[in-house]
Image 1 (cartoon, rainbow over the protein chains, first blue to last red):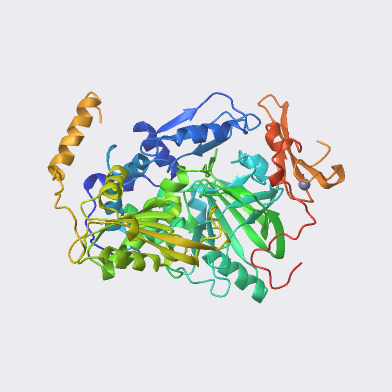
Image 2: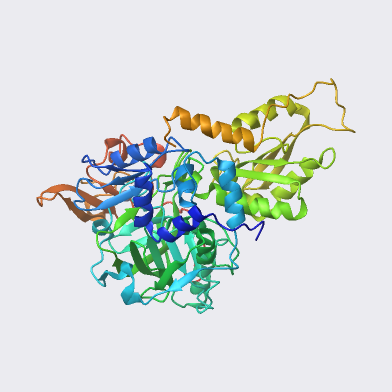
Length: 493
Length: 77
Ligand SMILES: [Zn+2]
């Protein structure tokens, strides 16, 4: 996908050049009042969870939180909420506080692509992640300040690892190398389970390795460049590289190096856990509080054993709170979920203005579109349900006109209030749906709802001849709103 | 910790995984793991998580039950 490319602003370029790692970004967030340090002593449970949930309540402006005083983990650092607010994402992309979600959406669209990757390769000896190397007596419980994310999780989870694996049948292919976020449950000091499904790239690698009885080696990257996490969570094509997408979004090179077991990894990550699939072994895993805000059940899933660990001096363990929304998970993947759906629709329907698939990974979406003719929005909705992500996720879809910002729920509710006729909604029963929808009668199936909240036009019956008020809008008003905000903040943006 | 908070397996099934110490080297908590149901817990957690009777019954695990297998392996061990 590649659309309306614009050159990056000088600020965006400067931020891209400055941020080469998680550490750089935390420093930058702190300078901008978007990263705090919790210095009081806390217990791993329930304190980490409680603080993470409280910090995550403000999806626009919540800060990242560094913990440096967790009982039983002296000297260890944990950070949560790095992608926990839209302001943190705005800063990453070189925008000021107060940038709207819609502005971020268009900026991410304009940066989207993998045709001009910016990747520097450096020798492993020069990579900060190799400052320390452990080759035996692994103890993840000691190296990482682990804790239970939600109270009924089956154990201690690593929820924000970026896992690199290669197709075991084509191990030299850079494009088929996958970087994804898969939930990891620590099962022993040197072993863990990793959840993937056959449809995911990692699932394909696991199945291929077991069928052909060849080893599957992986590198688990922890504490990564913030752009990496955003693309590790984005489903890109099987032969496309997440490294390429992440570097292109930043407009600045990512530094890669080789892990001890042959994967391309980020040279500036906090820690790399090298591991190998325990071929044919399945271990009880879960429950785990997942993004719809419900627990996914207990399953038997693939297990890996650690083969080596590299880490920076004083590594920072980056993790995520995930559960009932709003959580960091929603901010982390929301815009990157929306962008590909927009691009896929835009190809056939240039009238599509914006796509908001922020809610629970797109279980509810809002699409704004300029009706070409009466009923047109419904055709666009059908096409959205047929996009790769829509096929499994878009459960509820609200269609709004091009004069409604789909990211502004006040405007969306106005459209629902004024432009919806209750007998003009569509329910498509018994469709495929991700198995973890808590409302499902049968896991894996569900009904789809389309609410057409766009205006009627001939040959629709139009009823009364009421006319919509046209309040002043556009960039001039946006600028005034920013001035007002500035005045309200006493001149501080 | 004599039994597993999730499946009530007894001591012979439970491994002590790791001891958390403070800066002075004193014991703060211990992490345990149940070999039967693969539950991991820390003895300092709230009772609602680590006390079998206070946990919601919904979350009990019976290791004998045939839980679904994700991606059945080519050669099952
Ligand atoms: Zn047990």
